[in-house]
Image (cartoon, rainbow, N blue to C red; front, side, top):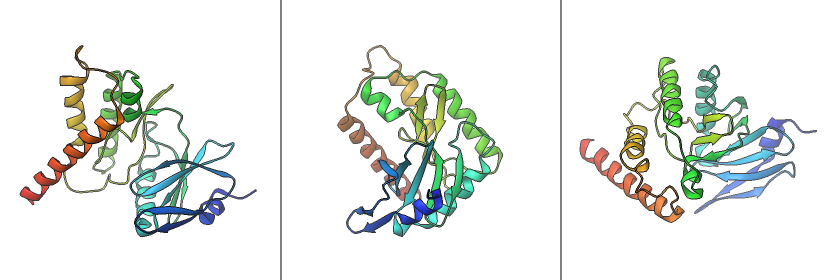
Length: 205
């Protein structure tokens, strides 16, 4: 039986206009693709391998070291190991907040309270929680969990979570607001938000 590290090393990715999977061990199943990495579940286990794109390999050790600082906080995904271009994390069964909005699953206010507390914990150990968005907060049967902490050491202020909370209180909870939204609509809103955020940074920088 191969170790998690051996499986991670066997994964082969190739970058071009997009990053593609050239080889994947049969013990792994693809379950997600992000801006910096692919995520594969190790079959018959509670673990996943996050394999970073070749040009973004340094993020593996960065994010791995951040998870080390968060090991005592249960809201964050548990990390088992990390290497030069991968991280081994616990597999968490649940829906991201993005998926909740698409499926119509109601998001209770307790999610906001849990995330606020988790971000305060991260700040208490010297981190600067950033890039908190709908796809890295999970609603599970056992509560709220946070994944993807790669940007928790950036020095620039990030208002993304505060903006999401405002949207929740001023729009989402209102009776008139639909609790089920299309993926296309949500992606469009995200693109508009990112464009305004970039323009704000450009003007102030």
